[in-house]
Length: 184
Ligand code: HEM
View: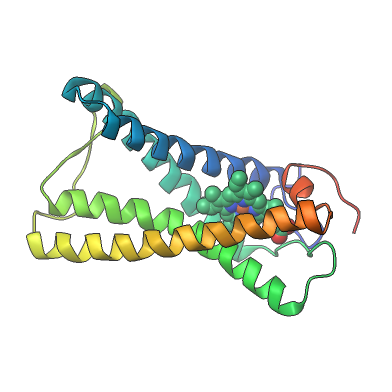
C-alpha cells in the first residue's frame, strides 16, 4: 500500500484521514449546537466528554496530517490551474491542516488557564499543561477567535475550490480525493 503522497497521487491514508477530519469537525460542531440547545444541565454534561474525546482525536490525527502534508509532495494539480491558483489552494489546505492542530491546542490551554478540567469519557481527565491565569485566558481566547475566523474563511475558499473544480471545470479533483485512481 502507498503510505505517503507522491507527485502522482494521494496515499489512501491521506484520503481516509482527510474525510475523518471533516467528519470529526462536523461532529464537534454538531455536539456544540446540541449542548447549546439542551436546557438540561445533565444531558449537556453527558455530551461534553464525548466532544472532548473527538477534539483530542482531531488534534492527534491533524498533528500527523500536518507533518505528512509538509514532508511529502502534494500530487500534481488536475485540469490547468494557474501557478497562483496552485499556490493559493495548496497554502490554504496546509493552513487548514495546521489550524486543526492549533485550535484544539488553544481550547486545551484556555480551559487550563480558566482552571477548568477537560473530562474524557470514563471520567478520565486530560492533564492541565498550565495553571489558572485570567490574563493568559483572555489572550488565548482572542487568539482562538482570530484563528477560528481565519479557519472559516480558509475552509470556505477550500470548499469553493473543490466544488468549482467538480461542478464548473468538471475535472477529477474531488473524485481523486474520494479515492478514484486518476491518470495525469
Ligand atoms: C466537505 C468538505 C471538504 C471537501 C469537499 C474537500 C475537498 C478537498 C479536495 C477535492 C482536495 C484535493 C485537492 C487537490 O487535489 O489538491 C482536498 C485536499 C485537502 N483538504 Fe479538503 N475538503 C473538505 C474538507 C476539508 C477540511 C475540513 C479540511 C481541514 C480542516 C481539509 C483540508 C484539506 C487538506 C490539508 C488537503 C490536502 C491533502 C491533505 O494533506 O490531506 N479539507 N480537499
